[in-house]
Length: 271
Length: 242
Ligand SMILES: Nc1ncnc2c1ncn2[C@@H]1O[C@H](COP(=O)(O)OP(=O)(O)OP(=O)(O)O)[C@@H](O)[C@H]1O
Ligand SMILES: [Mg+2]
Image (cartoon, rainbow over all chains, first blue to last red; front, side):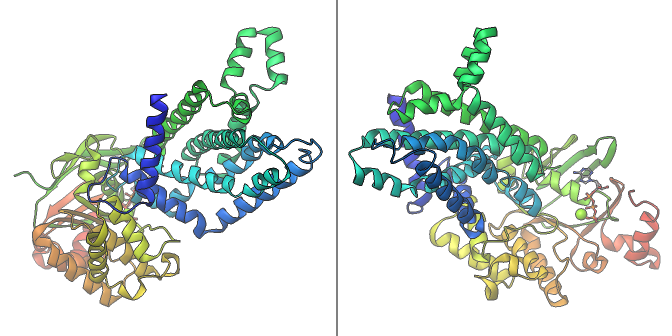
């Protein structure tokens, strides 16, 4: 619990650094925050941001109200919406990350960025944070859904909140995978397809089709698959449960892929 | 005191191809080193390694005593680097871009604004302050890259073809700027313009196929009535990398 509070504190401090007034003594995170701020501004300087947000909102709305049976279920919650988010992000997040390092390479700015005096992990973290914040903005813009359920009924807003936290976790996990993949290849199409494929493996690992298939043959692997599954963990969040081990899972998942990103970047940056 | 730039047996191989082959030199404060050589000789590769972007296959490079591999961030703090082609973020404005690099270098508030303003004045960019970089002409883009390298007044400057694409007036301005800064800094510039070497460099290194073939003051190269161009052609003809 103490750790969680501290992590929350760190996040707030990072947010304060990004948007708060400038300070005289730069903190150790300083470089990552400057990079993140620049990146986030760059999303909105190009059509990428608007296309992403519009497609996300249209698809999320359409799926929730049609396939999700938002009204027909007769329940005031966001379950139909949350159940589609992992699958929407499966395609949209890699579309966001495929250009992450490819663009730097294309413009040659990678040479500039990595010869500025900031540790390489901060460049990696900064890019990731910007993309994550961007996903947060896209998610926040689904607030009309939240207003709708509150007008129509009495939802448990705590559950809604944890559901959104879960969406952020999914976004973070996919983003970390996508960023690492984009550091490995110059080709944006390859980066997209590979990222979708890897994310799909983690999304589908816990689905009944896979686990049943495995438990009939290799029960141990079924447990592993369920343990690694992103979607399985996400389920807890949508039911209103924030378990420490799920947070640890997402934290280490993101940390692992960011580490891969840094290593791959170091090996491939000059190619 | 040790020289500001120390390069020892720096080597870079791409597969079986050796782009830079045991290059060694030092540059002291007050020196302007002209880095010459035919296309593909390994100038940019050497500079990339010196700037800590490309890891060397062998050998070491130090900036102000800091090893560029072991102690990269420290070395980069003392370095102003203009990469080949002067890359910049196209969607940013000139001011926005310079502020970004200044922030990463730890400047904030009015000091940051002052430094950005000074760098823009040194490179005559005031007229296009708020223009997106992608809408600038080639020469202006190059000057943005140059401004970024000068902004923090570093003791070491590594400039890869700083005057490429500049008009004659700007070339003149940049040369004057380099000469003004020279006494307090160690500067390395690569160039294909040989008059430039005569005009600003205190020393010239000619490199071909990754190897240093001459390291001398430009005047010493011009003995026996040969121009620098004749010397360059005599030494490097038939040496272009494949
Ligand atoms: N990433 C890379 N992979 C493979 N070969 C490379 C790579 N980068 C450079 N080279 C090769 O290394 C050699 C030296 O290139 P470099 O860019 O250093 O030349 P240069 O002296 O700067 O030439 P120029 O005057 O044209 O700028 C060239 O033959 C080039 O093809
Ligand atoms: Mg070059």
